[in-house]
Length: 369
Image: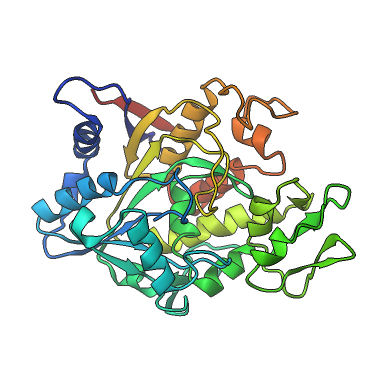
């Protein structure tokens, strides 16, 4: 297989040539204009950010993508699907209010926002997964599948269950309906490190499915209800909640790749990732710790597998920021994401994506000035 082309530009600017100008130049050089947008409904998959989180991408970035699509006659909309966990994005009304509070409005982005799986996360389209080993029919938010063209704009960061959150996670997990997310998480129930549990109840408060209770001051997983979304892991202040030491996170990564393939196969797509404010955990939390490495730059490609690989390689070449979770990690490894979250292996996702035919891990990095 030929090497995929991944385009990159750094974050240095000059007078009259700011970051947004460079971002537009990057995606144009990467070939976004090769897509026929004329009268095409164009989904731009974005993470609007959980209220309270400040690591998410600001709407200024998406406005550039919207402008490019509109200039070529397209009909763009920003989209995401509802979450499984309790928070600001569990239904479409709360989700839109959260997006607005984070600056995503039709006035700031010049396009509409559509929550792809409807009011309660139940509006889904069953999509066959070509070559799927774990998923035969992915449950995708219907507005995503109704679109003619699919674009992804991703904040590249760490993740508690998948190692990092890149383009494939933004597409696969992000486009799953409620039941789709449950299917992907079904083999990833957490465990409790009882010696660390202080019985604070944050895990109970943030569980949408009664999957955890506190008994005699110690949290306990209710296996029959837990869907393995990992929210309790993210909110636990002592690290008492942790993934199990089994292959569940690997299965999650493979299912996520299969969901992304269901979204992408058979229609024009293009992908952008910004490696800035590389927080250790997902933007789905209301909190975000300090970045684990310095901000790197902006990447774009038609190949989501190559894009994720290039972003991961770029992060792993960076030094750990003092005081960050990476700097303080007990187990130092060449893989920064495995250092922060030792129970994860992000490479499984990219290996599976390549196996499915979604893309190639081999890439040529092309620098755009």
